Image (cartoon, rainbow, N blue to C red; front, side, top):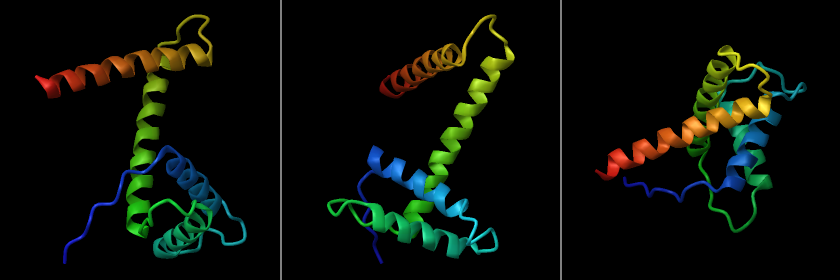
Length: 118
């Protein structure tokens, strides 16, 4: 059995997936007493209801994998911001701290891409 790789997620799909994930995980009526399969089934159902007609069908496993990737990236971002906050730059606002992180992140990405190309 061969499987075709689906197209990359759009920014809009990523945002929608995050909203749906939070809505389903924080639903007080359903609660936390649900299996992982039930949880992701609900995420897929809500995602499918909300996605525009021209978007590609996303299997439940694809949604799980994409959300895992997003959560990992968010965790790394939070860790980097914590490191900068722990350095306690005098007089730095939250925007300053995020700017410092983004500059460091962009430099890291440039180095990574240059290493790939060389």
